[in-house]
Length: 413
Ligand code: GTR
Image 1: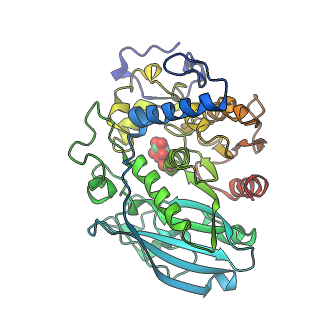
Image 2 (image 1 turned 135 degrees about the vertical axis):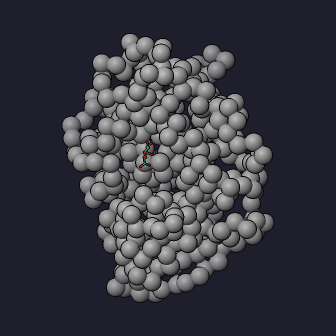
């Protein structure tokens, strides 16, 4: 087994299966007090306990207080995308916090489809103008990472970033299959850098005086992005063109971590897709492979709660592991996807996360993954829980979307 002593000299990532070490996972169906979960009633209590453990130790506590919102429609285009869709832009305005910028939501509803339409919802990485082919979407005015495609200047988007991540959102295909698409820029909720909380929702909600103290359980940026997803759900519930009972939440990578956390907390969300969410997402933390707890906490200290960092060098002491997070999606459909060229996210660890969520699905009389062997490349496996490991790099591709659309057709419609 891997020794964790002399840790300062150690790299905090690993690509050697021989060094993965012992994988004794916490028992999903055993409460902290040692009681075995055998019924759905027991599970309800265990579920609440696990939610609290993830809040206290990993993502931080999501403030429960209701926040007053206004939904302001800023534009409607009846013939968007050559007549395929009605396009709406809606600002989610924080009534009590006028200094906070709104969440700018971009909505495409298919014209030739049943109404209300089922929905794919997801936050995007670089602004709505980045994922739409339409040139009249306003450029995001919020902070963007200068590293994103070298098309931002002084952390602001430029015209060059239009359509840059269109490929990750095959809007036409989604619409033609009868789904609406609802998206917003994750940086509207909190800019993704160490001091980004100062201009996001965490500047006004939660204990704003003491962020990231070493022991505390304050929410981090991932918690904030997840919270934002729920505010978009609040909007979806008010829009008669959108079916709020059939919302499939998709998230890639860091936004995938946030999507799973949103999906477990907000049971209005009908199904969850984790695309290469990796460490702190679908991948088991105790599997010391690819990115590690220590590494993600060091590179991105603002993502998780302060207390998570105290586990950097003693991951085995974490009271939870990520299969227990995925289990909190049950009985709802869950898709976990990896890419073979993205070993950083630990495809095997993501598969095992999905696999060991199985007992929760069983309590509902459902089959989760239903297979125990790691599938070959480009094979979608599973039932209520699905998994694939596709060829290619860390990304969202047409292959991924083909699986997600079929998954939604079969399990959500
Ligand atoms: C990486 C990070 C991953 C993942 C990824 C992404 O740098 O280590 O955990 O979140 O970024 O979001 O693309």
